[in-house]
Image (cartoon, rainbow, N blue to C red; front, side, top):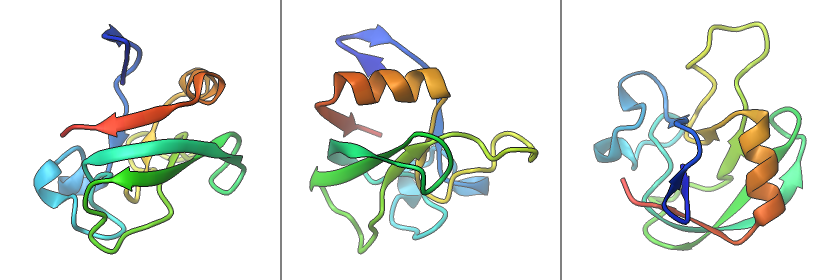
Length: 107
């Protein structure tokens, strides 16, 4: 994740061989977040504390929806929490929510 050309954090999106693989963005429930622009639309606790809701405003969704940014699963091995959402630390999620705006997924 970059903000105004400043590196913030390396997260991940997607699971298993689909993780961070833009060629698999069409795979529902396993592929990474599809390329495009997303509006930061608020937050919930649907996937744990401070789940950020993303609304796609441009790009192909491949019939997918319910895009989010959330954290790792509790008491599970790290690196397996994403079913297509972006996984980031709590500090980064707080910053994204505070600064708002849009998120562009480029690859």
